[in-house]
Length: 93
Image (cartoon, rainbow, N blue to C red; front, side, top):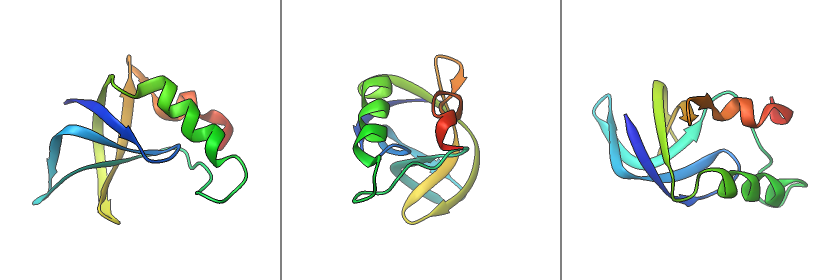
């Protein structure tokens, strides 16, 4: 299913419209699976956030293979133009 990215929170987490629905949960925050970028306050945080922002903000992404709902966000595989976000962020794998 496709979603429009409305806000980038950090290098691996963002908000979408419309809300997703999975396993009796729903929300608008997605955590991409397959890579892990630095958290706010850590070295490299802003660079990772800027990279994700320039790649997907305002654009359509596809989510697949939901894994779990954690910390108010859906952890799943995310694809932009048919390529996994994890492939774009291989330096964080």
